[in-house]
Amino acid sequence: MVQWALFWGCMLTAFAPISFLFFTVVAQRAQLVILSITAAFFYLLGLLVAATLWTVIPPLHDSIHATIPVAILVQELFRYAFFVVYIRCEQAVKRVTTKQNQLPLNDLTSSFGIIFSSSHLHCMEVAHGIHVASGVGFALMRALMMYGTVLASSLAGEGASFTATCPQIPLVFASALSTLALTLLDVALMVLAFEGYRKRSAAHIVAVVLLHLGSGLSVR
Image 1 (cartoon, one colour):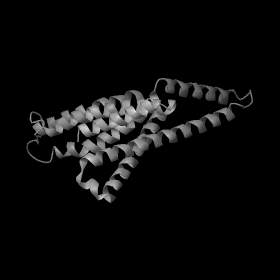
Image 2 (cartoon, rainbow, N blue to C red):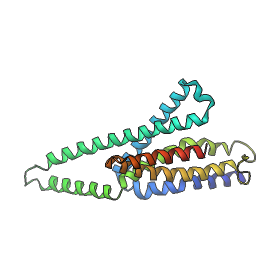
Image 3 (spheres, helix red, strand yellow):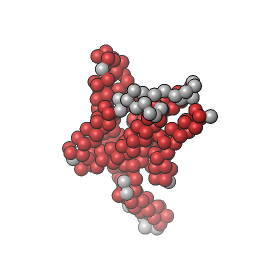
């Protein structure tokens, strides 16, 4: 009974805040759900490339201090790749919308639909809904990949594991707190990164990389 209580408590601690963001912000719009899933896919691609580099570069096997920066830089490259793909899709939609806006005046239904769609996309952009949805996709996939196995292992045997650095609380709960913090950080970093990419701001981009690197090294 204690194990199940610990399991559910840790799962809610780790996933409840990011799940709340998903259901209250992302799930309200189909476009944002698709965007979030795409962001999660790009995170997986980055993870795959990082794992491949770790496999083919032997020195990384024995140095966590080298592995983490390499993995984070790869993830940041894929974050930028995701932004580029999103911008190209956005531009393609705008071109199609511009062409369709030249429909005959008697086609009131199509014209009204296009005007409403353009206005709606603009409102979402102003509200940073797109940035948040992208961050939620990254964060959820990261949480599932990094914490899912730790959470599942808490049911594997009797008792709980502890660490020397934090002997007062079980390892699975300490990891849940780290996951909670990192998922919220992922969303914030995505918003900051999108702002930096759009404005071509080196300060924003460098801040994202340094914050990501600092968080990765602090929870190694």
